[in-house]
Image (cartoon, rainbow, N blue to C red; front, side, top):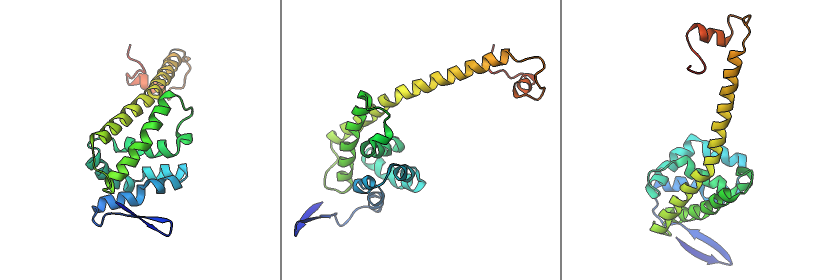
Length: 183
């Protein structure tokens, strides 16, 4: 990619031949375009089937086999962190710090102004590791909440009055030999 200065205006000139999928990707996910969106618009944009269909081949070609949705989440993390993180703790900060530079280099590789190199591979690996580390506490909280809900259901099952309506879900489950918890 070459930059030309014309009367104090910098114009970015893309290489004449970019693969059509790359051009599509840059049309919908160029960093400057993403930055101009509000959070809700960005979330909707990233969830569109057309966005995923366009992004997956470009991501696979440059990054390799990976979760494209997690890769695309980097746009929200890098450019809308106040909407993504409740608190900017150490895990969130590390993920935030890994996402922006990775996306910038990814865009440079797509526009052919930079070659894919081991430094970029290390950036993507770091981003995915940071993402997993950041999501782990959320997953653990969710598992704990589900366990508490199941214990509450189990306790409620044992405290049902004999006069419980015969069409109640728990009575129907018992009639078919289904229990909330195996005994």
